[in-house]
Length: 436
Image (cartoon, rainbow, N blue to C red; front, side):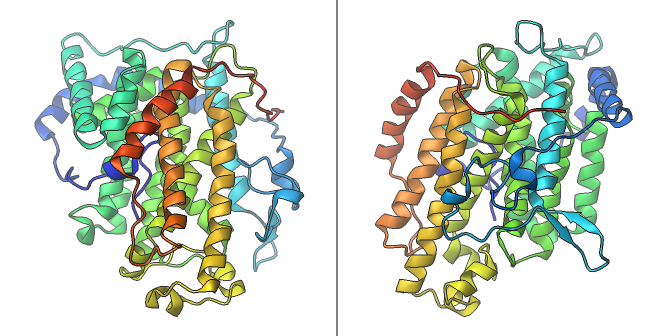
């Protein structure tokens, strides 16, 4: 299942052409002396572990009548979706966290890092590159290479980044490339050879680059990025966990399980990107609420991918749909593999599309709170992905034999519309989440 690599990637631009196996071992030896680049980042992460904090969950976290942390909907909006309690007991009788609480804990942690780096006027303090003399040109070359990859494989994304400051633009490129390489581990040309051990090695490599020990030039670009911006390692680790799930899991019993998967492979990207894209200095929204919006957009995009690719995934023996909701609709795995569009299937799909649109609605509230230069590509992603749901409906819910496709003309029309939305002034009324 393809990961939503960034908020800002247009649907048709995700390609498997970039081989993960390509590496720059000879460059890696030169980049090992960039340890100092990430000293600040590792210090911040260490401080977090040492500091106790009193958590105060938002109302969504402990109220069984409300939905997931990134959705601000009340009981009247819950539709036909089953509601789960946020606290559940495991077979041993211990209280376990649901997916919602696990994810929201990461949101709180990332938001706290951002707050530590805010200036009094509300702008983010971006650290300067601190590479040792003689290696700065190599770092610039690494960023340029990331930009070339983005320009080749994600044209809409690359175009949107041109409005950002050079520091933010290069950092987003570095994050994009890392996410892409991670996704290629299980979806790329060498995916059949990937084992859990290989993912463990990839995670160790991630930890090395977060402590200033990059392996190649792509790693070096990300290593410098996480030193300059308040980016936490957990969303990156969680994305790798999503890749592990794809190796061993092909069914999801309920939406709580599927939500966690969507967070791992797509919602994480929002948490990686927000500190780089930046929050508008005049925003009255809380940092946590903006992160929740980023999480909602990643989740919405991934749910849309799932609904678009039902037939394609079924041919690979995978069903990324809640099993309990299929059963409630009178459907089974066999119905998915047979691929017939029936009234039961149409009714089921209407509910799934409704849920995805709820996540898009919540995400839209947060885009206007981003730094103005970052809004255009994010709005473009939101508008383009939401149109895929329209196309599924236009295909009479046949996502078995027809792949919902947004035409090039519609994509071109979406870009100026997204730009217009990005420059509109915001009322800054996004409801927030308080910190304890």
